[in-house]
Length: 154
Image (cartoon, rainbow, N blue to C red; front, side, top):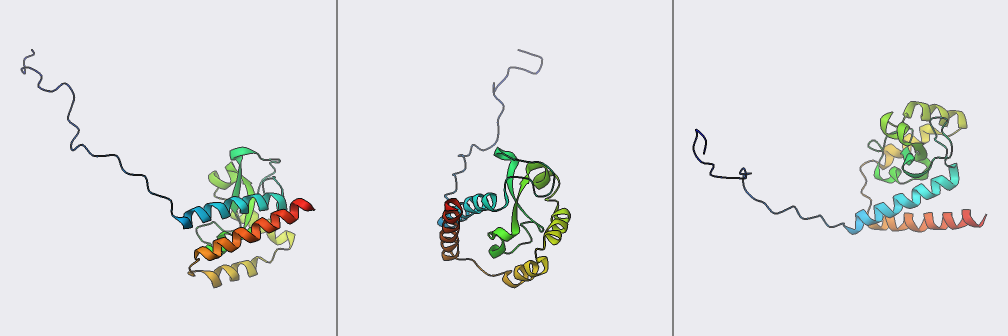
């Protein structure tokens, strides 16, 4: 017993006891989007290789090999363009996350390679705001699987 009297509680009170939050169930649409992204990454690797598009790193593997959306970030792209292989390239973790995608360097490289960047931007603006139903993602999955099979056979 101290000068303030006896301790009433051994453990401090922490307010109202609450149940842990329930985990949100994945919707069919989110599962389709995840599947399309995986196929898109696999197809981009087959088409463009495993080297970083914006820096000299070669043969990226594991978490260092990421699907970067170039020359514009994913937040600017329409739902339709996010899932096109024209807007995606392989990037290293450093370029994609820490350096913000390095869009200016990617833009410059795309122009030097002869990619019609203006047509890509027009497509993005034309498809902005349009809703992509589940049928869109199912069709993308089917076309990406066919393209991957064709690339494997060649």
